[in-house]
Image: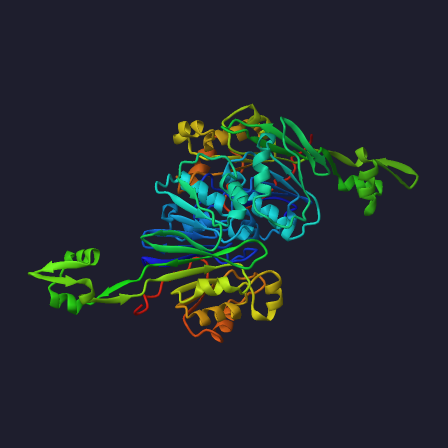
Length: 307
Length: 307
């Protein structure tokens, strides 16, 4: 299993289908597990995906339409049933705090898990840690909606031949990375001498929105963009009326932003052939494109070159 | 499709499994569709069962533990999304009205369906109609819990040979049933002359409870008893601690009550072999027994003889 991968739990929009559960995505990012927009049934989809509830460290809701959050009660109750020991942080649009309270306390249960609410009050960073920085950015939908972006700090890629020439081996490599310099046989080796700058990985999650500045800023240069394409472009008028994107628009974002891997999802049940989304996207974006399917696992692409 | 059948939507107890969704049962009873205890994912289970939301006329909750009601938000929102035109009546323990309010208004949606709440305030009949009488009876569980029972009025079984001898044919038969008497060739035929009494069909739904008087009264003589058997009898102490029944106890109820078809369900995930429930029940109850499986359809057995 990749240490960084997207586990797709559900890919439907308003109505589930036989093949698509309501929304749900778990981003596994080293020790973090960010659960985005858990729709109804997410608890069981996690089971089908072979992911325990303890893998969840953070829940991020873009907005409070049911297909993006009716799985919250089941997930929250499951965290307590499984006695998950680590804190789980929940982000959601602050204007919907009363909705979150209903979902969190939907029915009586013995709450033992440590769920910490960190509502999103506007654009900007909402969490930082070893995983990097998590940022929220307002989207354009009939109800207040935020997209999310995760950025790993830039780092350095170690060069094996230079490490060998400098005599740095084994555990000394991580010590050099950690401390910046290392004394080897009377000389001081600097990390800069044996490595080159490496761009941090980045990921963006963009749901229910029309095209807007927020979409472009979230997507800018990310390694993986998960983005709704509820409609095909023939139905663009319908998409815009309801505050949604078409596959062509989503792919256009990816092309302008120079993303690595594009993941299309949140499909209207009106379309029965998922390849139509890929075809529409391919006309606009020539990078790797995944038309998300339930229970698919999509690895983060490798880090891309220098800073 | 049988006009009267149980559509099993989910059969797990607290935690779903790969093969068992959380609870959920639709009793199709002529034009009525009684949805009992919809757990999370019921909306999609209905889809898998090929049942539209418009088939639901009534929602009956035994209690407010999550595995018995976290599907309410999805079902309620789906009724509006599908613009279901007929009223849908919801019954639940009145002491949990604040929980129902959260489930009904869990997230913002455009409510157009006509959902009418009729909380259950104690033992007794809660609804009557062409379908018969729906009765609630208190159970014994750590939170207030009610079982439900549906009784069709007793009627009459028409005797074809006597109808023919009396010269009553075609649409006149239903006219005779409706009006009680019919003039045929100068004579008056009474419905009693051409029919015998027929017992009305009955159905009981018993979830999360220890053995108690309510269980016995709900089950008494019903044609079909759906009853929880969360545990096997080896774990009887555990069952009683948590306010549950074992398969042996559930079958004992069926035997004492003289039920027609026994349907066992709400199984703990700790048991991997469902035949163990059947074996345990068969030692106590010799009637037809169904160990419920998701998406099974169980027809109501034929009406049983005279009153």
